[in-house]
Length: 85
Image 1 (cartoon, helix red, strand yellow):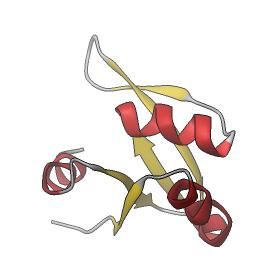
Image 2: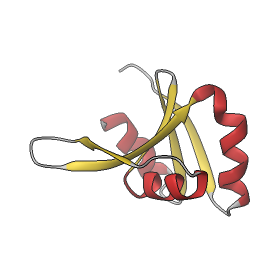
Image 3: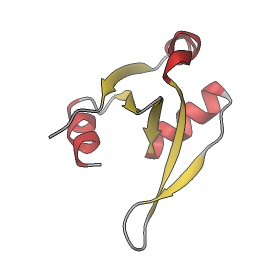
Image 4: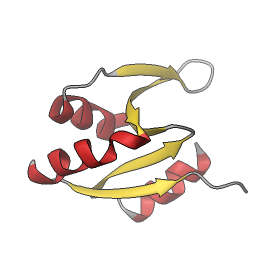
């Protein structure tokens, strides 16, 4: 999550689609917005011992379907592939 957080800090006004394996994932408030706009499931993931964070994602090959919906809804979107340290 460190890499995600560093990138999100650079683009706080954009929904960050963060590629993890075969999916673009969104977290926290981005996930809430993404799930509503795209009509996809909002889930939660453990983030440490006592905390959970919202999560919503879709397969990377569906980007051409979902990206225009986010933009048409008025959101800026940043896209990032996960990188190794």
